[in-house]
Image (cartoon, rainbow, N blue to C red; front, side, top):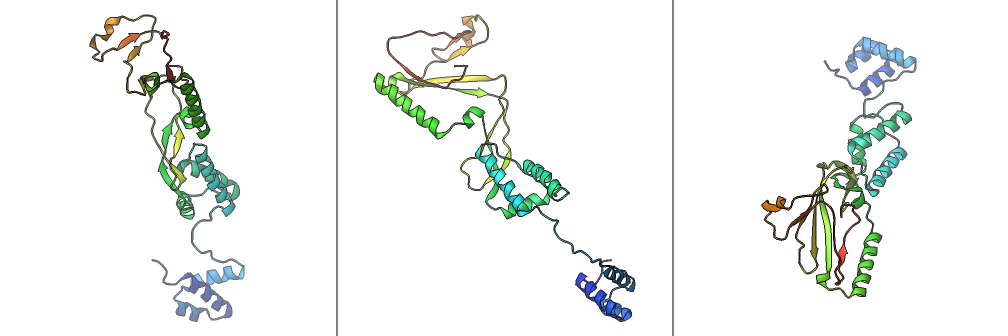
Amino acid sequence: MAPVYTQDDLAIAVQRVLDGGLPEVASEFKIPISTLRKWTVNAKNGITRLRRGLKARLPSQTEDAIYDWIIGRQIVRHPVARSDIMRKAKEISELVLGRAITDGWHTRFMQRHPELTERLAQTLSKTRNTVEFSDITQLFNSLAKVIIETNASAYQIFNVDETAFYKAAKSKRVVAVRRSKNVWTTTPTTSFHMATIACGSASGFVVPPVFILPGKTVKLDILKGCQVPGATVTATPSGFLIKRPLILVMDGCSSH
């Protein structure tokens, strides 16, 4: 059965007992005499009863460092998840406080930093995730220079790109700055994948597909079931030169 007295009543009653009058105090505050005697002895020995409440949190300077670490990881496109933050905070807590923090710390930490929120990170390859604005500017200037020098028309400008079918990359929830435009995370590369490459000109002409198969030779009758006009197949990359200059926009992928 829960006691009918409060902690404040107990503290006042103990002081009254120290001043004299144990039975009267016990009756007034409805506190058992045995309890009063116990805490009166403790009071004489300098022992006080601690109040219940939230467990001690990390110092504000430490939480500020964790906050800066979260933002820094997002800036370099390696955002951290809740589990990463808890792991880091527990390591620091064991060093600073001598004990590990509980799961409730993360909830209170997020409440103390409302500018942080949970987001679903978009997975990108390492190459795509490291593109900077200066790279885009350099590409634009290079293309403009070539187009002017060759006087190329839309029929002479082609773009080629590929879509790789990797093992499904699962997005994860991470902690990021609230109202961030994009939250990206780098996905690890795999050794093998199947790629589909498409090439089209600025005028709308699309190059017929070519199927590149592993091996030294391949039979042409393999395309009997293909219904795409102009499609061809090869086992090794080949090409030829024509007098009309063409501009091919592509990345440096080895499969190209």
